[in-house]
Amino acid sequence: SQCHKAADAMMALANEAVSGALSLLFDYQTAKEDAVTELRNCVEKYEDAINDYMSQIGRCPLSANDREELVYLQHCVCDIERIAGYSSNILESVRKMKKKDIHFSKEAKTELCTYCDIILALMKHAMGYLESHSQDDAEEAIQLAHEQDCMEKRMLKSHKRRLKKGKCSVSLGFILADLLSHCRKITEHSLHVTHALPPILPAQRRYPETLR
Figure 1 (cartoon, rainbow, N blue to C red):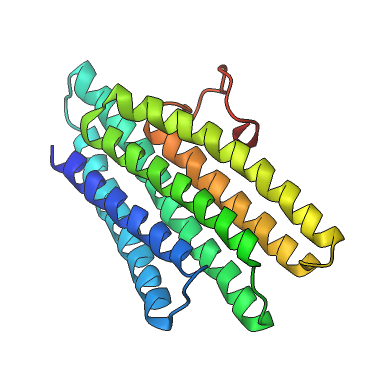
Figure 2: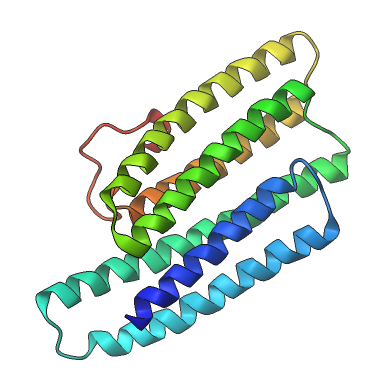
């Protein structure tokens, strides 16, 4: 359907926004920051247009299957907008680092790079599920969420060790905590898209601790 194609395109833009925002943690460029902001704005425009169109469709007679798909897409559009929204939060963290002229250590950057790769891979599978409802994509997304949880614990443990040795600052610790929080939210909304975490029903299965 046209709604589904538009949602797919919206998800691709959200993924690109998050990817661009995360890349600024390692290579800051003003042009890249502007591009992320523009992508974020495009996602908002998609959200408004798709919601208006789906609202019109919702007033028409629909089969049970079509009605179910419409409700799913309405939830997805909301989640995709929030995913893109967190790219702006990541940008804010990048700006704080730039303003304070502080940087992650080589070890922290290596861990953060691995962490970001997990996030981007998970989002790719969420996009794959949105396009084809592939159960393989849903299962891969869940597995990556567990990997993310383990990596986050490792990063926080490493940060505490560096802090005790005076190799890291408290300011960077706050920024790291913010970044991890934003990424957890991105994962949560991505899992909503795969039906792994229902947007309304409370999670009854076991999920990574950071997603509860």
